[in-house]
Amino acid sequence: MKALKKVLDGDLRQFTMVFALIALLITFNIATDGRMITSSNFQNLLAGNAYVLILAIGMVMVIVIGHIDLSVGSVAGFVGMFAAISSRDFGFPWWLALLAGLAVGVLIGLWHGFWLSRLGIPGFITTLAGMMIFRGLVIWISGSISVPVPDEFRFLGSGYLPEWGPAFTQMNNSTLLLGIIAIVFYAVSQYRNFVKSKALAEDKESAHLWPVLVRIVLVSSVIGYVTWLFGSGRPGTSFPVPGLILVALVIVYHVLTEHTQFGRHIYAVGGNREAAALSGVNTKRIYLLVMLNMSFLAALAGLLFVGRATSAGPSDGTMWELDAIAAVFIGGAAVSGGIGTVIGSVVGGLVMAVLNSGLMLLGVGADRTQVIKGLVLLVAVAFDVYNKQQGKPSITGHLFAKFGPQPPVKDEQTTSVEKAA
Image 1 (cartoon, rainbow, N blue to C red):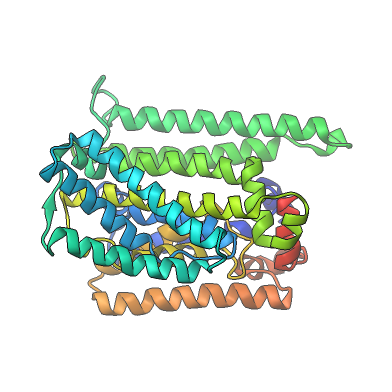
Image 2 (cartoon, one colour):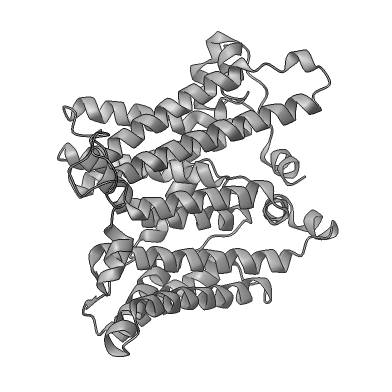
């Protein structure tokens, strides 16, 4: 048990949903006679859910500061329709329509942020109004009909990495190169972290290299398998472009929230707004920027979706906000704010996506799928809240309880303050 803790960097609880995701994949793959873990299904799963996962990245920051954004689906639908109409009726080239759509998203974020940060209207009310406003505008400007988007949008929404290079690899070489870069980057970053931690450690002998090497081998094996899975599909397919955009966003926002002053201020405001203000954090500025960022990501998600759908429709974005919120809470965010991570939210979104895909392959109807997803969300959040109230370990803690003592679970407030510091 101690060896496993060292390999997983000391905290088993943060891998709860990763274990759940792996268990779901294996279970559905067995139940569907191997139709779950295939190249085509994974490509569709990632490309078809990239927009929700992008929304989850922004939503976790909103929830961490103690608010919620109910307008993301309507904003995404409105921006997608705006870009389509700009191109069709006003002759905007595709790139200008894309940039104009993103600019509209930023302006909408400023609108929401103004009401929240300057007038103190709760985000729930502000974005509820935004949801109604922009849903109505989508129907209004579209005339309740779909509008086609330029062909270039289709590459962003449903394209694949290009084919090139030698054929002896029997894979898409762009995907292969991407996988190699990911493995090298991970191995180097892990080794550099080890060198830094050893240099700072008081007891140099306690810093062992073997858990780092085991971790690198395990993660590299997973990345290698995923690379082979995406790169060995039918000719013309590879790692999807929306997935590439998603991976880039996850890296950028993980660094932004975990390793920058701005990220620490977000957690500080979410943990205790008054204490953060007294310590010099500009809370109004944090509120404004977080809401602006959320609408920007909603605009990007809407543009990717219309590219995949090849047209913008008046009902685009309906209920997307609920999927994003569910992904964030399944990924471990606290209802009271102050706790939540970008990677956890993306993993939570993947759990929902795998549930959707697996149940569809099993022939389960949309009605029963919604029931199951609702129960999963309720159980995940209820179990997390109960354990934090009782000071008990999480699901993973229970699974491993018999192998040794678990560290005490801290309450939400303490964890938030520590993270902000």
